[in-house]
Image 1 (cartoon, rainbow, N blue to C red):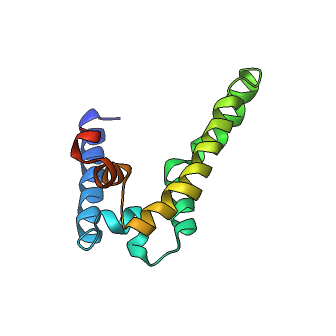
Image 2: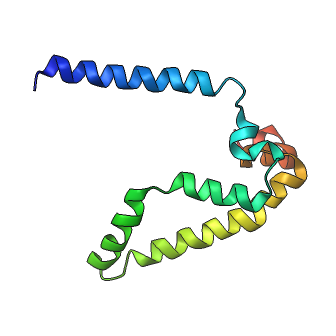
Length: 117
């Protein structure tokens, strides 16, 4: 394949993605991404955040990694599970209650600006 054609297709693809993102994100902000504009319950937002951090490749590769590592990698999978449960059941309800969108806003509100900078 002609390398100039390949580069042209890649540039066109990323240009199209950029145009789509500009058009669709005119009303989007951090609140709409992180907490669903407060129109969704916190547990729905939690599932959305977990889904955004995982991909189809994860579902294919992690079982193989667990099997190839004699189940040692499974400890990491269990750690992720506990981490997601903590975020979903402790942090997200707290974010909703205090009207926050990130852990940095919580640290700022609780301990001041110097707690995370």
